[in-house]
Amino acid sequence: MNTRPGYKPVIAAPVDEPVEVSLLAKSGAGEVYCGFLPRQWRERYSGYDSLSRRQGISANVTVLENLRMVALEAKKAGVSSALALNVRYSQEMLPEVLEYAEVWEQAGGQALLVSDLGLLLALQEKQPRLNRFLSLMAAAFNSRAVGFYRQFGISRMVLPRSLTIEEMHYIVKLHEDIEFEAMVLNDKCPYIDGLCNFYHGMAFPEGIRIPFEYQRAASEQKPVTYAHDLFYAGHACQLKFRAGKEIINPDWDNDFCRPHCAACCLQKLASAGINHWKIGGRGLPTEVKIKAVKFIKDAWNLAVDSPEEGIPCQEIKDLYKDTYGRHCSCELCYYPEDGMVEV
Image 1 (cartoon, rainbow, N blue to C red):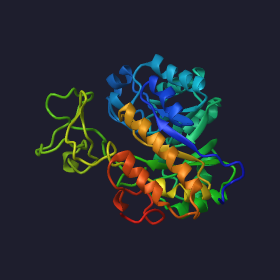
Image 2: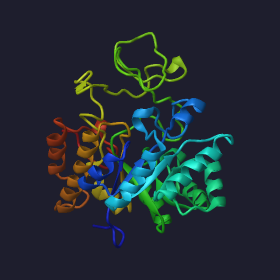
Image 3: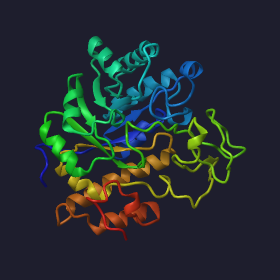
Image 4: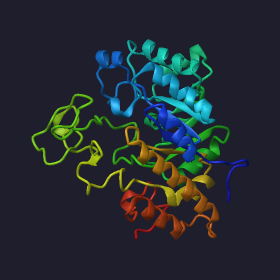
């Protein structure tokens, strides 16, 4: 396989509470990442995606001590850890954001996921030990954008989901001394990373506890996401909702039971020099995250054993069906031009 010397892929998985760290590490994750949304920030700036690019208490660590515990548990489990501070901030917000970064560093956290230039400049001035990873929300679409961000101490780039693997390969070849990361499971978005202004909130059915405020549109046929501006209502992402152990709308396709996927492209991503594979899904149930990590780990093992390099083996497609109970499809494929043929 045509990969960099010493290539070893790392699966990066999302966590929302400390107990998930060891579970995901045992399942095969080599890195965990999380967001943070404490009460005082919500009271001042709301619970929307104003501190990281995922709103609400269900998709973020919400207590400072738990944030410390995520970093400590990651260190104990022998996996790296990153804190997502990956939206754009006002000058008023920056001092508090830097305080959270310092808490993360002191607890043993190893990296920050960043997209804001003001935060990158502030970090460059403070010179913390934390690694700086450029979030896909920074929209580094080409090699010149990567070169621009490198001057701010970036050591890893999370490449936007709209790029093809060929485009990724070209960028990596021009910047071989830093790490690159790409999405491989969950959270495929029809919009362009870094250029989307949708509010990724959720409207819950009546009787379900609401962890944040939202507006309802006129149509209430399904629980859907809504934008701040009701002109966009109903056009954003759609998710299932949990009521105890029951899932509302069980036939509704999404990342619970039919995730967006790049498993058939793992060989090509590896050959392109992408050495970190990101699983989306902050806010998903723990068992769904564990299943996702195991699936990508098993898919990579199958890809390595595939007799034809670069051609997705049927066993990966079968693994998807065995794991999620349904066939994969081009509609759900991250890189359909590089990956599978619909079955």
